[in-house]
Length: 243
Ligand code: NAI
Image (cartoon, rainbow, N blue to C red; front, side, top):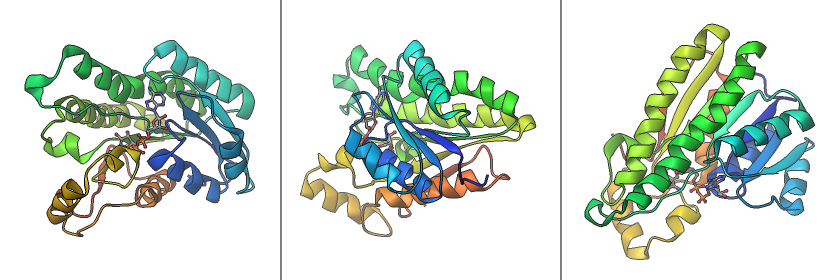
């Protein structure tokens, strides 16, 4: 898809990977809908507008279906049709399964997996009528390989992979693509909590020997949005971790 003047909704775009994705699309001339649970700051909106594009902030919780639907309607009222949806918002709450409470499991599934459904389902109806659209979901290598302490997170991201492939099949006849990106370890607030010792241990397991940057993931989102013949795929951006 040619991205100039297209409208792109990036969930969880107040920081980290989501913000890098929003900036990368803005650089391509696309208008941006920023989203996070809290109100989006005017400074952040101005930063995106500096790319010479339109930008609005739509705050709300993606894990709540009616809130997700409302956010999409609000974005459509202000910008018009949404052409690209990036389901990036996500959270983790790591602990070994034996210590994991029901609430620890459910809360992560509700944001990462149900949140992806909540945003995609109402927007897909519109995209099917438009006969165009791009959906990009944020999975994780944890969803492909499993990871100690992440039974909830890995299950949610494996769910995102299955969801992605199914949406790709159901929407393909209308020219809509749906793909997932599976980042490895990327330097953001999510990984900042790791100690230097753990980071060194992680680097030893990564063939390219360092954590990735949010921009590495953002570039991949642009590539997927621009390519009309890739759908139902999971692209790992992981420094070779899953080789
Ligand atoms: P982050 O924690 O820095 O940012 C997450 C963003 O999502 C924030 O803007 C936050 O406000 C938003 N968010 C969280 N829950 C939300 C909700 N219920 N409703 C609306 N917004 C919500 O995270 P980071 O590292 O930028 O990760 C982005 C995505 O990439 C997530 O889906 C994460 O699981 C995935 N990922 C990250 C990796 C990493 O190493 N950082 C590795 C693999 C996947």
